[in-house]
Image 1 (cartoon, rainbow, N blue to C red):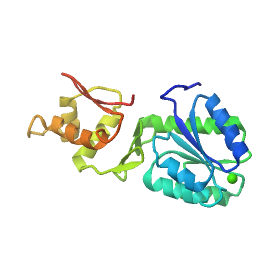
Image 2 (cartoon, rainbow, N blue to C red):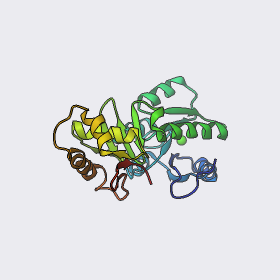
Image 3 (cartoon, helix red, strand yellow):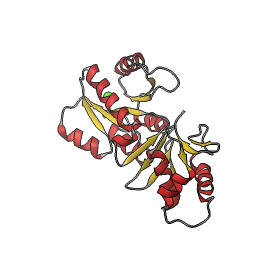
Length: 232
Ligand code: CA
Protein backbone atom coordinates (compact mmCIF):
# COMPACT_ATOMS: atom_id res chain seq x y z
CA UNK A 1 0.00 0.00 0.00
CA UNK A 2 1.59 3.20 -1.13
CA UNK A 3 -0.12 6.48 -0.29
CA UNK A 4 2.34 9.00 -1.65
CA UNK A 5 1.36 12.53 -2.61
CA UNK A 6 -0.11 15.62 -1.02
CA UNK A 7 -3.01 13.65 0.49
CA UNK A 8 -0.78 11.00 2.08
CA UNK A 9 -1.22 10.74 5.86
CA UNK A 10 1.17 12.86 7.92
CA UNK A 11 2.93 11.14 10.79
CA UNK A 12 4.85 12.90 13.53
CA UNK A 13 7.67 10.83 15.04
CA UNK A 14 8.66 11.85 18.56
CA UNK A 15 11.93 10.14 19.40
CA UNK A 16 15.08 11.50 21.02
CA UNK A 17 17.32 8.74 19.71
CA UNK A 18 18.34 10.30 16.40
CA UNK A 19 19.36 7.08 14.66
CA UNK A 20 16.08 5.36 15.52
CA UNK A 21 14.07 8.43 14.52
CA UNK A 22 15.90 8.50 11.18
CA UNK A 23 15.35 4.77 10.58
CA UNK A 24 11.64 5.14 11.34
CA UNK A 25 11.37 8.18 9.13
CA UNK A 26 12.91 6.31 6.18
CA UNK A 27 10.61 3.31 6.71
CA UNK A 28 7.51 5.49 6.87
CA UNK A 29 8.51 7.61 3.89
CA UNK A 30 9.16 4.42 1.98
CA UNK A 31 5.54 3.46 2.74
CA UNK A 32 4.45 6.77 1.25
CA UNK A 33 3.68 8.70 4.44
CA UNK A 34 4.71 12.28 4.96
CA UNK A 35 6.84 12.44 8.07
CA UNK A 36 7.91 15.01 10.66
CA UNK A 37 10.35 14.40 13.51
CA UNK A 38 10.53 15.95 16.98
CA UNK A 39 13.57 15.12 19.11
CA UNK A 40 12.23 16.06 22.53
CA UNK A 41 8.98 16.58 24.43
CA UNK A 42 8.76 20.36 24.12
CA UNK A 43 9.34 20.23 20.39
CA UNK A 44 6.76 17.44 20.18
CA UNK A 45 4.05 19.54 21.84
CA UNK A 46 4.90 22.51 19.61
CA UNK A 47 4.91 20.45 16.41
CA UNK A 48 1.72 18.61 17.39
CA UNK A 49 -0.14 21.89 17.80
CA UNK A 50 0.72 22.84 14.21
CA UNK A 51 -2.11 20.41 13.57
CA UNK A 52 -3.03 18.40 10.50
CA UNK A 53 -1.17 15.28 11.72
CA UNK A 54 -2.85 11.99 10.91
CA UNK A 55 -1.02 10.14 13.66
CA UNK A 56 1.71 10.62 16.27
CA UNK A 57 4.32 7.97 17.12
CA UNK A 58 5.44 8.87 20.60
CA UNK A 59 8.44 7.52 22.48
CA UNK A 60 7.80 7.57 26.24
CA UNK A 61 11.40 8.00 27.41
CA UNK A 62 12.26 11.53 26.38
CA UNK A 63 14.52 14.14 27.96
CA UNK A 64 12.75 17.09 29.56
CA UNK A 65 9.04 16.60 29.05
CA UNK A 66 8.44 12.84 29.00
CA UNK A 67 6.09 10.98 26.67
CA UNK A 68 3.27 10.72 29.21
CA UNK A 69 3.22 14.48 29.67
CA UNK A 70 3.44 15.08 25.91
CA UNK A 71 0.49 12.73 25.48
CA UNK A 72 -1.58 14.57 28.09
CA UNK A 73 -0.83 17.97 26.62
CA UNK A 74 -1.53 16.92 23.04
CA UNK A 75 -4.74 15.20 24.13
CA UNK A 76 -6.07 18.39 25.72
CA UNK A 77 -6.23 19.96 22.29
CA UNK A 78 -6.44 17.15 19.79
CA UNK A 79 -7.97 13.75 19.11
CA UNK A 80 -5.12 12.77 16.77
CA UNK A 81 -4.35 9.03 17.11
CA UNK A 82 -1.26 8.44 19.27
CA UNK A 83 0.77 5.22 19.26
CA UNK A 84 3.17 5.06 22.17
CA UNK A 85 6.62 3.49 21.76
CA UNK A 86 8.74 2.48 24.68
CA UNK A 87 11.78 0.38 25.44
CA UNK A 88 10.18 -0.79 28.64
CA UNK A 89 8.03 -3.89 28.43
CA UNK A 90 6.43 -3.05 31.77
CA UNK A 91 2.65 -3.30 31.64
CA UNK A 92 2.55 -0.35 34.04
CA UNK A 93 3.87 1.87 31.24
CA UNK A 94 1.27 0.57 28.87
CA UNK A 95 -1.54 1.36 31.29
CA UNK A 96 -0.10 4.78 32.13
CA UNK A 97 0.34 5.56 28.44
CA UNK A 98 -3.22 4.61 27.64
CA UNK A 99 -4.43 6.56 30.69
CA UNK A 100 -2.59 9.60 29.38
CA UNK A 101 -4.67 9.34 26.22
CA UNK A 102 -2.66 7.11 23.86
CA UNK A 103 -4.63 4.91 21.46
CA UNK A 104 -2.18 2.06 21.11
CA UNK A 105 1.14 0.78 22.38
CA UNK A 106 4.14 -0.88 20.73
CA UNK A 107 7.04 -2.16 22.86
CA UNK A 108 10.62 -1.70 21.67
CA UNK A 109 12.28 -3.48 20.10
CA UNK A 110 9.49 -3.96 17.60
CA UNK A 111 9.34 -5.53 14.17
CA UNK A 112 8.83 -2.82 11.57
CA UNK A 113 6.02 -4.83 9.99
CA UNK A 114 4.15 -4.90 13.27
CA UNK A 115 4.49 -1.16 13.74
CA UNK A 116 3.35 -0.52 10.16
CA UNK A 117 0.34 -2.77 10.67
CA UNK A 118 -0.62 -0.89 13.84
CA UNK A 119 -0.25 2.43 12.03
CA UNK A 120 -2.43 1.25 9.15
CA UNK A 121 -5.07 -0.02 11.57
CA UNK A 122 -5.15 3.30 13.44
CA UNK A 123 -5.32 5.37 10.27
CA UNK A 124 -8.07 3.17 8.86
CA UNK A 125 -10.08 3.68 12.00
CA UNK A 126 -9.69 7.44 11.98
CA UNK A 127 -10.43 7.88 8.28
CA UNK A 128 -13.49 5.60 8.16
CA UNK A 129 -16.08 7.37 10.25
CA UNK A 130 -18.33 4.32 10.56
CA UNK A 131 -15.65 2.20 12.18
CA UNK A 132 -15.54 4.28 15.30
CA UNK A 133 -18.97 4.97 16.67
CA UNK A 134 -18.10 7.82 18.96
CA UNK A 135 -15.65 9.71 16.79
CA UNK A 136 -16.17 11.06 13.30
CA UNK A 137 -13.18 12.31 11.34
CA UNK A 138 -13.25 14.22 8.06
CA UNK A 139 -9.80 15.48 7.12
CA UNK A 140 -8.53 17.43 10.11
CA UNK A 141 -12.04 17.87 11.50
CA UNK A 142 -12.85 15.67 14.48
CA UNK A 143 -16.28 15.25 16.05
CA UNK A 144 -16.58 13.48 19.39
CA UNK A 145 -20.17 12.40 19.71
CA UNK A 146 -20.30 11.54 23.39
CA UNK A 147 -18.75 14.78 24.60
CA UNK A 148 -20.13 16.80 21.64
CA UNK A 149 -16.65 18.22 21.16
CA UNK A 150 -15.59 19.47 17.77
CA UNK A 151 -12.14 20.49 16.68
CA UNK A 152 -10.38 21.32 13.49
CA UNK A 153 -6.58 21.20 13.02
CA UNK A 154 -6.33 20.81 16.80
CA UNK A 155 -8.43 23.90 17.55
CA UNK A 156 -11.64 23.49 19.56
CA UNK A 157 -14.78 24.85 17.90
CA UNK A 158 -17.91 25.78 19.83
CA UNK A 159 -21.16 24.85 18.13
CA UNK A 160 -24.78 25.21 19.15
CA UNK A 161 -26.79 22.05 19.59
CA UNK A 162 -28.39 22.34 16.12
CA UNK A 163 -25.11 23.17 14.41
CA UNK A 164 -23.57 20.12 16.05
CA UNK A 165 -26.43 17.88 14.91
CA UNK A 166 -26.16 19.22 11.36
CA UNK A 167 -22.40 18.73 11.25
CA UNK A 168 -22.69 15.21 12.65
CA UNK A 169 -25.28 14.27 10.05
CA UNK A 170 -23.10 15.61 7.23
CA UNK A 171 -20.04 13.82 8.64
CA UNK A 172 -21.93 10.53 8.92
CA UNK A 173 -22.57 10.82 5.20
CA UNK A 174 -19.22 12.19 4.19
CA UNK A 175 -18.68 12.30 0.43
CA UNK A 176 -22.42 12.09 -0.34
CA UNK A 177 -24.47 15.01 -1.55
CA UNK A 178 -27.42 15.56 0.77
CA UNK A 179 -30.45 17.51 -0.38
CA UNK A 180 -31.87 20.31 1.75
CA UNK A 181 -34.99 18.23 2.21
CA UNK A 182 -33.07 15.18 3.44
CA UNK A 183 -31.09 17.33 5.84
CA UNK A 184 -34.24 19.06 7.04
CA UNK A 185 -35.95 15.72 7.71
CA UNK A 186 -33.02 14.21 9.56
CA UNK A 187 -31.77 17.14 11.55
CA UNK A 188 -34.98 19.09 12.18
CA UNK A 189 -37.46 16.24 11.93
CA UNK A 190 -40.36 15.49 9.61
CA UNK A 191 -42.68 17.61 11.72
CA UNK A 192 -40.67 20.79 11.23
CA UNK A 193 -42.89 23.65 10.04
CA UNK A 194 -40.58 26.64 10.38
CA UNK A 195 -38.71 28.62 7.77
CA UNK A 196 -37.86 26.53 4.72
CA UNK A 197 -34.45 28.18 4.32
CA UNK A 198 -33.38 27.04 7.78
CA UNK A 199 -30.91 24.54 6.30
CA UNK A 200 -29.18 27.26 4.26
CA UNK A 201 -29.03 29.50 7.29
CA UNK A 202 -27.46 26.81 9.47
CA UNK A 203 -25.04 25.73 6.76
CA UNK A 204 -23.88 29.35 6.69
CA UNK A 205 -23.42 29.40 10.49
CA UNK A 206 -21.54 26.13 10.35
CA UNK A 207 -19.34 27.23 7.48
CA UNK A 208 -18.34 30.39 9.37
CA UNK A 209 -17.09 28.22 12.23
CA UNK A 210 -15.64 25.10 10.63
CA UNK A 211 -14.44 26.36 7.24
CA UNK A 212 -13.88 30.09 7.05
CA UNK A 213 -10.97 30.24 9.52
CA UNK A 214 -9.16 27.43 7.66
CA UNK A 215 -7.38 27.32 4.29
CA UNK A 216 -9.05 24.13 3.06
CA UNK A 217 -12.83 23.92 2.84
CA UNK A 218 -14.78 20.80 3.75
CA UNK A 219 -18.38 21.89 3.38
CA UNK A 220 -19.43 22.13 -0.27
CA UNK A 221 -22.54 23.57 -1.85
CA UNK A 222 -23.65 21.51 -4.82
CA UNK A 223 -25.68 24.04 -6.73
CA UNK A 224 -29.31 23.11 -7.15
CA UNK A 225 -28.86 19.88 -5.19
CA UNK A 226 -27.64 20.34 -1.66
CA UNK A 227 -24.56 20.02 0.49
CA UNK A 228 -21.66 17.69 0.99
CA UNK A 229 -18.96 17.41 3.62
CA UNK A 230 -15.77 15.93 2.23
CA UNK A 231 -12.02 16.10 2.30
CA UNK A 232 -9.92 17.24 -0.67
CA1 CA B 1 13.90 7.63 24.04
